[in-house]
Image (cartoon, rainbow, N blue to C red; front, side):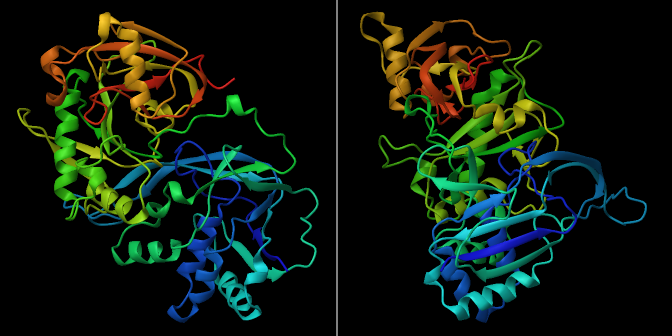
Length: 464
């Protein structure tokens, strides 16, 4: 018989951020988050049932609709500093935080595993004991009661909507456990790393409301070759966009120096012809009326990798600082630049993941597109199309090219300001239109791994 997990949110709310989007709330609760909560309360001799649970297929989720809320305030930081400014907590400071959560119309949520008969009664009883120990889901401000049981006729509670996993695009992307998820959580804990690092592309499943009509195949978004985008925003001074190549090269050098040997092939790119590898980006303030092209953040785009390589690269990006602060020295520029990984803080739009991921039918370059090959008969549009296709994107329906930026704030570079690996090649700004929506980040051209060839979704080109 199937097994069911009943969740009751005692406060009537669910305090958990959306992860990928710092300005969104997670709803419904993700099975991967529940699994992490079960692991947190499990003893070493209670892990076998969790290993069985992660091998089951993604569950059906029954939940009501929910509204979102936002809470703002100053909270005491955990890190200690020599000159702490907090009056009641020595060596600490208070930082502004903005948190998002959900207010469901029904505080009850249910997960159903149709293949739960693979679990023995003993394993189910152990999972139930673990569930009853879990004090809360998400943040500690959303206490919850969790109960496992076996159900003969798994009808959901009245008023709840059923969401089912689907192949291909759905209406929601939800994190679920998978075989090996338990080992990854344990490895992260031993390395004193946060559990969110286990939330890569492998844990993402598409869900859709049961009974909803499938989307027309021709309009389903095309996935980006880069499922992960780690954004490091500038704290304090921001460099001009013309220095993008120097900053991405400095970041690349730092990440490779902080990643444990042997370096993952996706990081250095050697021996991987035609396969996407890690890309370093400068994210400018571009695409808006008063945009000035300053770099708001740097970012690292990570292609789909196995969890071990992905985890090592994430550690190389963030280093050992518990506050995820990165100090970057750029040769030839006085002083260092401070970068911060803080996806749950209120951020400028250009320093968020969603700004660069779309989906959209129309994308416009914010850093020049460096052509992969010299065009025959000066057919630049054909060469630009080739660069897009070689980057793993569909052939566009229409391509517009210009020597000048085609959106406010896009970066214009002199030949000597291009990344060193791109100098001597033809380059141009571009606007491309696809027959179906495309998800970002959209990177193309010979410089896509080194800071140029970045596109932004253009207003009016969103999925219709």
